[in-house]
Image (cartoon, rainbow, N blue to C red; front, top):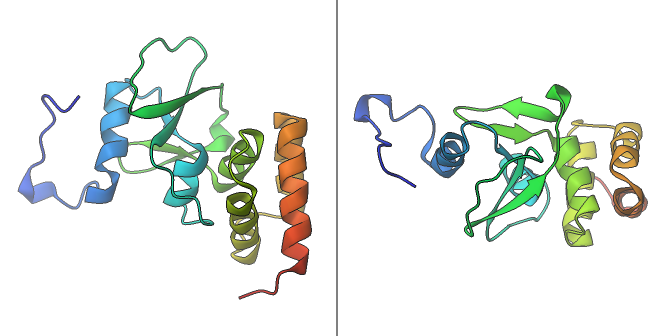
Length: 155
């Protein structure tokens, strides 16, 4: 995967070393793969998610495959995606609700919802609306996290 990818010392600030893997996957996919799910939560520094593999969302017709990442197929809107230095990532709201839809551990969703609300990244209403678009599984996970966040004291 790393053939013909070089880094010049003069440009080591673009992008940061921690983002190199994400940039490589963007290049590999011809910019069709978007960092998502638990990986996006960790990029946004939300919650306790610490995925062992990178999660990428690709269009339904995407045919490439690699066992070192977890692929999810979906069409994402421009509002659900943020541009980063050399790659794209789902927004905090999209990352949270897609984790709920994918049955990522509820504690990780709870902590991500709490932190996103506390930091003013989203509102309860926006989370519920986004979860409705992804279906009943996402709605249930978000409703549970919102109930949990009501009982938690801000940090």
